[in-house]
Amino acid sequence: MKCAILGYGSIGERHTRLLEKAGYTVAVVTKRNDLKAQKYQSIKDLLKNFSPEYIVISNETSKHYEQLLELENLNYRKKVLVEKPLFHKIEKKKVFSFDICVGYNLRFHPFIQKIKDILKDERKVISAHIYVGQDLSSWRKRNYTDCYSSKKELGGGVLRDLSHELDYLMWFFGPPTSLVAQIEKAGELNINSEDCANILWTSQNCPCVNVSMNYIDKIGRREITIHTNKETIFCDLVNGTLKVNSNVEHLTLEKDFTYQKMHESFISEKGPLCSYKEGYDVLKVIEKAEESMKQKKWLPFHYQEDIINSTSP
Image 1 (cartoon, rainbow, N blue to C red):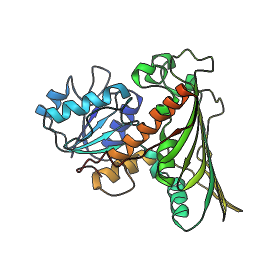
Image 2: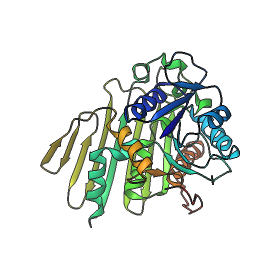
Image 3: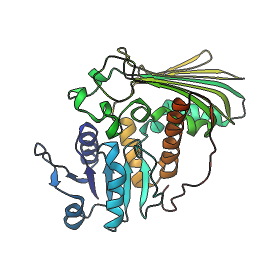
Image 4: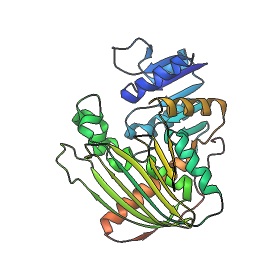
């Protein structure tokens, strides 16, 4: 099977390495010269000379939409995995002629899947408290000021960069019914994107959801606390701990595990992938949070089944 990677930053390098390790033939579209993989200068040349069956879009978020449009216009009709988030802003075109999924790989973490299974059983969910923080200056391999995360115009900022939490919360509980947000560039990082965001929302399946995300946590944490009428669930994804009341489970995963499972799932058409529609819905929540910040008030979230891509999972 032939696979192609559009963009060769740190995440593009990871996708290339993992797909090569899985035995696939991989080509890359990039202007960089420091790589061993087969390389093309443009998407047009890639499709003409390589004919991939599976494409991963791993460029800056601001380029995702235009590259999907280019693939559509060049009559590509296979599979495309788009790195999260789907776009950096809501776009008009909502349907493409090929299979699309969005790279929310945390859905493939065994603890996230276990929490999802627990919540399937009949119980009343009371509240969910989500925290994710990572020091941007030590997170990226290159100078953090050069990466897309630091640049609002490229789709950076915690709301989009750390939107895994928004995706799995909607996977757990469905879309919000109303929300309010506080979004700031509050720290001392040399960036123009937001480094702190807090969102409160209500949904039909959880009346109190609290999400806190930032680029300034020098410890590095990713934690989930969910209270139901039957149990308290606490998950520490960084240290690999899941507590359900007094029961404690520990797990050590390789860093690539969830990415490997995501690729396997999309290629085999099995598993809990984030669909095009679901990825679009995450973006709608992000933009509603930004609107709430501007208006400084709670806003209703009117969910509509308006993003249906018939060929997507």
